[in-house]
Each structure stands twice: as structure tokens, then as C-alpha cells.
Image (cartoon, rainbow, N blue to C red; front, side):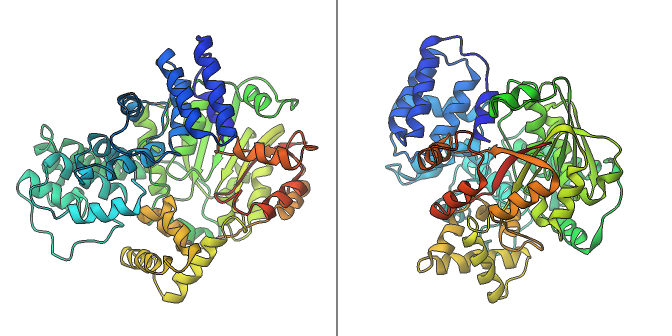
Length: 525
């Protein structure tokens, strides 16, 4: 994904100095020299602060940094601009902003304005921060601005942190309402629409919008999403039930500033020498969840129209609301089981299925259905779990199952507490406790309690690709070229990075290379 993001996050630099510095920063990142890379990129942004592409590159780089407070005024100014910039995913700013806030001399991270803004817009994935948030939730004398930010964060995480023992009282004052919103959503109040109206011109207006008006809008959208076919089999129904209760992934803001390019141009840039049919592209996103990937796809491809399908109506309603909020054109959402898509009656230049097939009872059967929807010479972008890369998740699921935790809010909170307690003597559990999905209710359920999951090894994927009649074009990595650089050094004879046998050896030697998943492109022969 990294190369595609970089190409699409902005156009020509228009500044030779900025271009030279940005290229220098990329080369330094590939060498692991992050500090000098940040210095070079900071100078590029000074030379051309108006360029979206540089801000996207800044977001990709700064996510690696732990900062101490106070940091330089120049770096603080960059963080302030990045936090509001549509070319930056706010999730990339969690580590630098939280680490700086936790190192404040006064010991109060909630006195850091950057952290309070971040808490509105993303999930803050940090164990120490969560501990402080739980304590601050009941602290007397907390400024209302901080209390509102805490309530936003609790809602963003779906209240996955330990909950207060005391029964929540009927709220009356603004502070009472903010306290209430940190323990359960405001839409659970009687007369919720009246509450939203009363809060419209108060410091809690953002909470009323996020916790009352937006959920109500999603309820209205549920029945307006057209359906394609039915739901096939008991496994599909079980997966559907899970995502109706916990739509996934949980997101609030994403990178939305891309310079769209035609699909054919992107393919040629990612995979030189690969021929792609020019002209408008029809794209299918199978298993779109809450819409983050489908929206990004619609924004990235200037000539595309996107059909996004999912089993979960709740997820689709969230996706539809976000697409409307962002004003994304050219995207349709449909309620459908991908196993039933053979009746669609159309073909697509690109079919995306990332993080979906491995949740089917028979993944190859679903893959075969999707392959049949690819136009001649068209492409697939597939994401599948790696057995080796996800070994610590498998270990954690066994731990959770043996302890008897259930996929309920109380069971998920209990599983998190047990994992943290055992993590000091179990590095695999410690890794799970640091994973981004550990910090939301839907993420924890997807990671530890999924009703159906299957992992792969690369030889098995190679056989499936051959059987389906496709050519393997290459992987995508979201690590600024680090993995590709290391692979080239290990296998210099594979100039195109397409030998799955060599990649299998590379993963055996580097078992964390595909911790997230295998993400790769294919082309129909």
C-alpha cells in the first residue's frame, strides 16, 4: 500500500528543492535513518508547505517517532498542521503526540492541546494513556475541554477500557453530560434528540453530533441500502451477526486528500512492464466493512466507479454516512454475500478483497467467485492472513478460549485484563496487547473472538493463484520501502520482487514481515 499512497497523495512538487529533500528523506527511511529523514522532510515542508504530497509523506514518517516534551517549535508547528491536514491520517500522529504528552513536566497529559484534539479524531492506542484516561474520567476539577475529549475517546474505542463501578446518574449539567458520555453513548438517554438540540451551541456540540445525531443517521440509512442476493450458509450468517454487533474497522477520520490517477497509470507505476487497459475503470470492493478502503479507492482512481459490498448492514450504514460526509462521488454500497455475486452480470477492471476471504468457510470458493468477475486482463488486489505473521494472535485466541471469555463487552474487557496480566511473562501476549486492534471493542472482537478465521502460507497462495489462472504481480507494503529494500538485498536476482518461493524463504527468515497480512496484486491472464 505504501507505494500507492505515496504516488496518489499529491502531484508534482513544483519546487526542485522540496523534491530533492523529499527524495532524500525516502532514501534515508529505506536505510533506517529516521532522524535525518525527518530533518530533510521538515526542510522540504518549509520550502513547499502547500504540497499535499509532502504532508502525506510527513504522516508516514512521523508515526515512527517517540517525542519528548518540550520539542522544538518547528516540529510542534508541523504536528499542529498535520493534525488538521486532509492528506494525513491522524492515526499516524498517535505515537509522537502521545509520547510527548506523557513526558510533560507537569505530569498532566490532558493539558496538551494537541492530545485533546487527537482524542476527538482517532483511537489513541497506548496502554499508559488508557490507564491515565480511566483515572482522569473520575477526577474532580478537570477542565470541561479535557472532559469532552475524554468522552470522545471513550466513544471512539466503544468503551473498551475498564468501566466505573458506580451507576451513571441522570445528567443535568454540561459536566454531568460529559461524564455520562465517557461511560455510555448520549444516544442511550431518553429524549436524545432533545438533548442534541440543547447542546447545539455549547462546548458539548461535538459530542451530541458524534454520539446522537450520527448514530441516528445510520439507523435511517440501514433500510435504504439495496441488497444483492441472500446470505449463503451458516458461516456467512455467523460472520454477519458479528459485524452487525461490532462494525469493523472503527475509524473517525482518514487521509482524504489524494490526486486521483487512472487505474491503468497506477498499475504501470507499481509494476513497470505490466499492460493495463486504458479508459474508465469499474471497481468492486468485496467486503468493504465500514467503508474506509472503499472510500480511499474511490478517491484514488480518477476514472473509477466503485461498487462496495458487505454482509453487515450496520457496517454499510456507517460507510454510507462517512462517504456522504466526505462528499465522495462515484461509489455505490450494496448489502451482499460475496459468495452470491456470480449473478451480478458485470465484469470489473479491479476486484479488491482485503481481509475478507480468510473469514469464509471455504476461502478458495469465494476467491473463485470473485475471480470470475474480473474482466479480461483485469486485476485483483487480495489481502490474506499469514500463519507465520499472526502466530501471536493464534496464541492469544487459544489463551482467551481456554480462560472461557465470551464475545460480550464484559468478556472482551475481561480478556484484555487477563492478557495484560499475563503479558509480563509471555511476549506473544505482550505483542497482542500492543496491537492497534487491542484498543477498541470491535477491534478486540475481530482479533481475538472471530467466529471464522483462516491463515495461509505463501506456497498455498501460489497454488491458488495458478489454479485461478492469474499472474502474481507483487506485494504492497505500508513501511516506506523498508521490506522491499531488505528483500532486494537478500535476493538480488529477483528484480521484479515476484518470486513467491523466495518470498517464502524471506518470511521464514523474517517471520514478522507479514504481521498484518499478505497484500498483493494479481492480473488475469
